[in-house]
Amino acid sequence: MDVLYYAPGAASMVVHWLLLELDLPHELRLVDTSAGAQRSPEYLALNPNGVVPTLVLDGVPRFEAAALLMTLADRDPQQRFAPAHDDLLRADYHQWMFHLANAVQPLFRQWWYPHEPAGEANAELVRQSVAPRIAAAWDRLDARIANHGPYLLGDRLSAADFYLAMLLRWSRNMPRPATEWPHLAQFANRMRARPSFATLYAREGLTEWANASTTETV
Ligand SMILES: N[C@@H](CCC(=O)N[C@@H](CS)C(=O)NCC(=O)O)C(=O)O
Image (cartoon, rainbow, N blue to C red):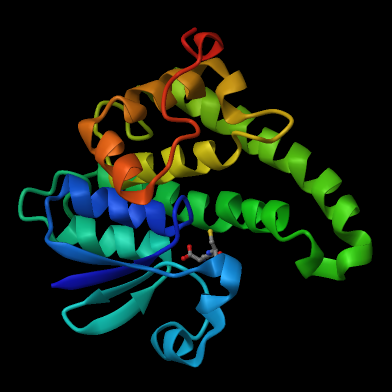
């Protein structure tokens, strides 16, 4: 059985979500990141980057949330969450997966770990500089959903949408949460309405951002 090393609400969340959506048998192992368990020698042997997620697939530990999503989606015989290789939408799918992984998720790394780029003394400056860059990402993604929605690939739900929903969630306590953007708010509501989302929340013990607030239903 595949084993997911996770921390509640962390980047592992979206891998957990897709495992549930695909109905894949898996075991969860909690990594206590607040206690630094991700830097233990045992964990580093699985994932030398010292971060979650790690997914042990067919006995082999693998990392990088986006890559794990793409691997899981490609393995699904029904291809529910990834366009086939000969489908024109495949290029759009790659584009959005890589955009989220390369251009959006790293901004959150700076938001959550602002001391990393230039030390504790500059942490506040890093946060101040990254918040508008995250807002600019929401501008572009809101326009994408407005003009080509309801999902990133139009009518075709894909792994990229689960990934985007996780990133939107991460902004929930920022000065401008993503749900202030109307099309992203609608998108978030659509993703949160999936039965798997409630299961995910129950299993990870999450509560915040469970439901749409009244301001998010526009
Ligand atoms: N690019 C990696 C980033 C993973 C990552 O930064 N995970 C965070 C939680 S969201 C983590 O494990 N933080 C603990 C730490 O850095 O010590 C991925 O997507 O898998």
